[in-house]
Image (tube, rainbow, N blue to C red; front, side, top):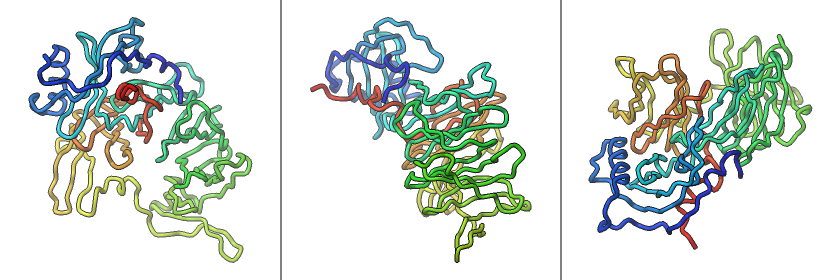
Length: 394
């Protein structure tokens, strides 16, 4: 998979990846990296060691970890890639002779963050969907001209694009593909699109025309948009989200001031909405670590911070992370519950942070995002720079 602008990540590797022996002197820039990780993890610097190092020639001044909006000088820069070990985790740094950049936990490179960066002057308020590492580096545009997006568990993306004030199209971008989206449907409004677990069908709330009632649209992923089936929502209900139960979508709606759930059933040749018991909230399920332990995200008692806590059935609690002066509005969880991405506001500014659930480390994500930032279960690129840097030479 190739991404526009990612050629800057091509490296001239001049030395095989190797351990840094304890008998070798520690360079000043390496000491800075050790001290930086000590501060980030609140660990004694003596408990952190250099696990691996590799000398490289970076093609520009970003040291292989560019940040959104950056225009680094296009000058080859000699430096090194460092892997530091703290506890049972490894962390990525890149350095020149005097500067360093932090690439986050190596585990975090299995995932990434998505956010829309608005394009000034776009008449329909569309923007570019930008993917970064969870350390906020290596930006890549995944889709251009989109209004909203929903990452799917398999690493694919459903997104909407505004065509006018009264028209949107639903788009599908398969996992591992860049800029080759497929149009699934066009409607006046779109809300809460999702794929089923086998990734063969999609469903979304839609307003077919301006002023029309909300309906559920559904279709096989490979079918033509014109073949989508529309099911008007029960009563005067308002859409909340679409879930899947096997091959059938389950809708959550607000009806007569209450949250209710319905599924479309066909019996004896007749089809209709059938109410069903409440469906568990997917986020609540994702935050449940085991039968006796769960994660909670809530405001601090003073209301000045957002806290990520482990909570046991006994009522005992442990604060994993605290993000000062931040009000969370959206939470997304990575596969295997390794990382959270929290999106919200700090004052009047949209902000987002990734949280390593193994250590509680908080990683700020780029400030250029307009609206929510969500996690994607996919690396920034196939053959990411981390993989290239750490791959043993033949």
